[in-house]
Image (cartoon, rainbow, N blue to C red; front, side, top):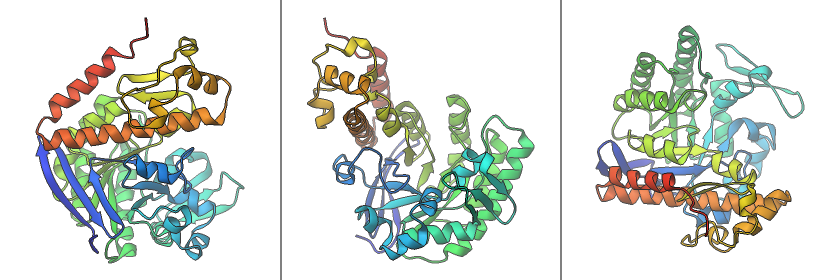
Length: 376
């Protein structure tokens, strides 16, 4: 493996990009979906399973790991890779999403964010410098700048204030990160649903010459067409030779649309959360295993899948597990969902290489539209 952090574009099909991020702990094939391991675990999964499904990289959350078990403790135990037994690349969020999601438990100043722990009420201060320090203690391979994420809809003045603050924090994060061979710090484009603010944010971050760029503050209340409009405005402003990461997105359809607009990396809790609530993602579309129509259906979720959870268990059994609140139901459906997401990403990568991404995306959407045809 390379001792440096590099990104190579291998193929283009319109705005869609096929590439590889290479770093000391491994290579990430892009477009890539990163399973979310918020607290050092991808919920309901062994990390060996996650790897076997085709995941090159997972995501950890700085805020949650700061609270439990604590960054300094994590460092004493060898870092997040050693702690979780995942020797492959890890990206850590900066805690910026919690600035929005924990609005009742935090206070923002120029210095940073003061959080009151949702666990025990203890007060924590997170500056841009402390966020990077924590991510360093976790020993993650890709570290995100601290930013302020704004839920939409919002007043333009508030969106602009948060965007400008995030830019100032990005400069401080870059200084704190310094030069770490083999690792990268990504900046985060903000600007809500305002094209001009998005362009300003992207241009300012580009001037910092970072190793990668994320698009944040989307999938936070705006319609899908607005999200795509923001990507169409943002991606052309970002360097062609650097990876682009759309944070917290999303559904399979969101992913297809974002890849078509030039995005390389994704993360979302959706496949794991949906699995724990009885919803399966498949090539036939979504299947709600809570529905009574599955009670006597002997078919698997997908007889053609390589994933045992998708191929070897009947829908009747999965329905029973879900309706009985058995933990195994959530485990099997999470396994199925992550398998589907990774197979979708492999399909996307192959289609870009073949120069037929647009056609393949249409075929995938058509299969979802046909739906899951019930047995006669």
